[in-house]
Length: 516
Ligand code: AHR
Image (cartoon, rainbow, N blue to C red):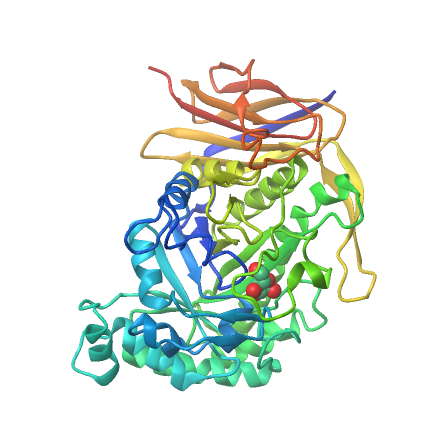
């Protein structure tokens, strides 16, 4: 057994979580839209074709914002195809996922779905095959009240009131060779700047996200952010980061250590953004949008898992089945985001349904929760407020994380990984203090002792644990509740001290509230 001490102080906060930190992502990819959130004819579908069973799970999951329509799909999407009478909409070849896009679901349907969820919509414009002109057209269509060609078109299509979409991505992963219309940093920086200017001339209230690198291990990472922000610093509010954690190497200790590389990635992007600000003597701070994060590897490298021949509509691709250990790594990633609440203002779990998702469905059948559903739902529900600085005294281990780039062997040494990864969030309205604690030791319990200065009289309101001897256990249609949180026994609180024992390889959520 390892012993770990944690010191918190009510007055020492990293920052306050933005409500958009708890977002998700819906892409026209596989069965995320068709057979996921939208399935006319399903017994649970409403009159608009929205699956009510999925909506219920989305409400339980608790995302606050949902990014749409991609992803790689966005870089070839003509938004005009997805509006107007459904019968008149064209079928198109989608080159991102080699599928046929029927366009039965488009921007207006998505906004209606968001209102039903309810979540805030976040749209990505196409800066791959299209550019600033299409971007300004979409902003006019969505956000202008009326009296212009495109806003009146929206009204004729049946949406009288503007959608009021505030948050927009200037393209998707534009550094990536797999992206339609990929660009150099300088090319993208120029295009993003011109799109941003026009979008803001139409609606000065929009907030814009510039594309950062599509992964930390891209060869252009670092220089890309620097050059892009040199161009568009004055025109954007945020820059994006994407990370998919993996256990290709079958090294679970390294897999559970890998969220620490997200901490580093965030700190590196902050440093670059602030260096650009410093060169301009600017007090402006570019914030971070971690708008794709998750575990993804089983259905990632194998071409058969990514595409199905014959240009099918909504093929069952990227349907990763998540295990107990995936939920642990995923929870660690959530902790990394919380612990950077001062700069990461937006984050999107990629994705929401079926495609690398917390919610799975069977077309025509039921919907269920994957293992990663639970840490997300807990973080979204209980992780809002002031994230406190934690001084953690904990033994460490060494790991070497394998994160391949194409055919390259890429290893990232992690010389001192604390067994405990923790975030502490104080909701000052409710007076509660919630601890999210990941024990990364695969065989040792952690005896945890927390001193929470400034919280003299608290009691345990909720204590839950996810743990299973079988780290490869998963939830399936037949056993949808195989992995879920269970009560964590033996949490004691005396004064401002909390003591408990965390099982090996466990995810724990403990909520303290003022004692009655
Ligand atoms: O989320 C799956 C894909 O991963 C997205 O389309 C793309 O942006 C990223 O490479």
